[in-house]
Image (cartoon, rainbow, N blue to C red; front, side, top):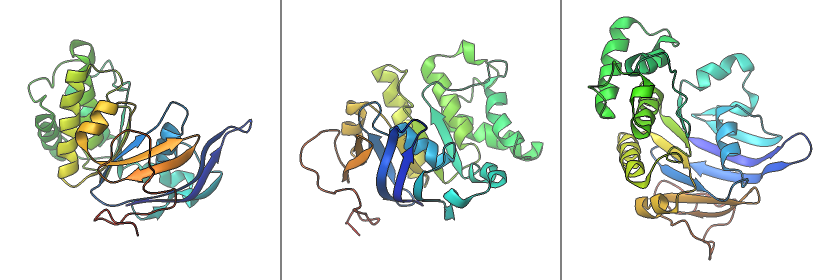
Length: 244
């Protein structure tokens, strides 16, 4: 589903954000990207979205080499990838329903499809009774649920989340993680960058830890901790968690 080979990103001025990363993420996995600020987590998310381009290396997403993708095809790539961010990025002048339906309208979906899909995804995130409200009328947790609904309304096979609980209190974060877990169990591949140790430890999913722009740990059902590194950068897992 996602494959990175020898991926390095050097920004103008010489800052190395990601160095020699090799990673395989299988269909249906839930993977945490962890590490301190500046370790490369958000850069990896941007590279997977082609918001940034690699300096060297190759990235495949949903079977496509996105490093060779011409600019005009990038919007088609993003139809396969839903995104959720820390700051929600909702349109303030649109209602909950309009925010979610907008994601389908830009794809040219007919109204006969948009209505039922929006209703279905709002039920999934627990906001079926708040479709007519505006973002300012919602709590932070509810706004993030709208953001997730918008990202998932087109049923993309991949969901990328960059610190989705970063602006939320612990209790609200639990609800968001239950929702992401439900989406993952429906078959979507979820990759989530986070600083939240408690969430990573509670979820017990695969953990890819970065430090100084490199992958230093890749562990199935891992915890957010330092210590022994069971898989060095370059190790690859198959769907059963064994190194390939």
